[in-house]
Image 1 (cartoon, rainbow over the protein chains, first blue to last red):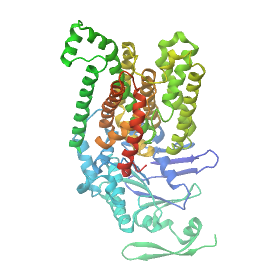
Image 2 (image 1 turned 30 degrees about the vertical axis):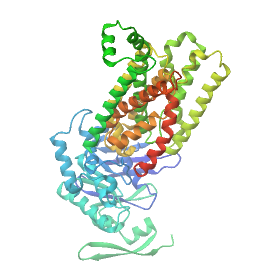
Image 3 (image 1 turned 90 degrees about the horizontal axis):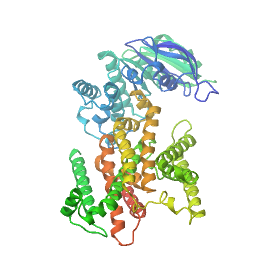
Image 4 (image 1 turned 180 degrees about the vertical axis):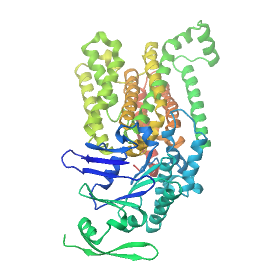
Length: 259
Length: 328
């Protein structure tokens, strides 16, 4: 996917995105990072066609996402949003089955392909044992995985995740991130996500897009672009960057800079 | 769960059949069921002829009005993502009632076009509610408050007509009350035509309604054109509510009560919820009307009054009993 000079504003007064360009590489995990209000989720929203940009375009397979038929796009690209609502009596399998709607016409019954996709989505997210449970009965971590299962059931080559680890404790954060990595390695999914935690972003991404004030400041492999100077300029935080033999690079915040 | 759904469906269908037969055979003229059936086919029984001309259209109008109002409630709740949305609450019915009253008063010759005026009035009210409560999205609270205000406005306008012309306008008075007494086969034709179209169309939008119960963003990412789906579902809901109002008059609570009970019995999947609500709505209004004309015979209590008396307390009861299910 190519980002070509995307400009977007919610209220037409102040631009939340100011001419963003970049490349999302196929088969990689790309993570958008940046301080609060820098436009990370907005950018993901434009790429997922939730918002229409004022100028520029997110181009997927040579065609702007805005000009796709919605169903056609939903077969290429699935999204897990940060906050979600569902009817209280919906089951895990019931919600996962929603992911098949882009592949079905209005009256068709579930076919074998649909069953296989649902099975695979539940298996990938470790929810086979919970398929008949209602979503309201699940824990926060499980609930996040159900929404992921629904997106997976769409069987798209591209998966977007907006802050998938927010609201989760550290165990479930790592569980979701490991799952995402597995989907990337085993199932060759192209992944774009928004994360807050720099260490998680560094550890689980092939590439970072660093945003500030609606602009993409830096783009590249974590090892190349995450520096003490970058953390100071983007976040205003003094950090020490260390290396661990097992996990590689990690960041230790030292304090808040003078601005 | 599946079992509970089947039991609910069968019970409501059986009750509906029972009440329909009871309603046909009971009243100021009583006939036996076999006598009724024979009379309807032979056309020689005088009592049955009277029932055919007076009671039968009334029963059919009750059934269709109930089904239409209940389904319109389900659709509005889906499209506005709000369990309190109902044609009666947010002003669609009163808009339909007022505009049709206004048009017929100005152009009495166009009485035949009542359903159209009614639809336009309902659509106008619905448009007002949307446009006045929409900012960056639909806020459920603001939507209901705007709806209540619109409803109050149209109700007031309608009443000012009645009040000013209480002696002169009695002939159109039935447009804004809801006495099923004088219903004829021509009412059945209007309601049967537009009501059936609306009910049939509602079955085609089930999966859209299901998708809208997720977030708009999520529905969009699943390939739904959210705005277009909202518009189409709203038009169907307005059609159902306004044709029901045009023929059956203003009846509160059906669109609120029936979908809520239906959700508890058969769940929130619109593929089962919509047909079930249609049956339950028909049952409810027919029961209310039958009760209204037999309870204090020969005096009649309008179905709308019965509905209000049953509806209020029952809604409180349901909400208390199932408090957690309605988290919203």
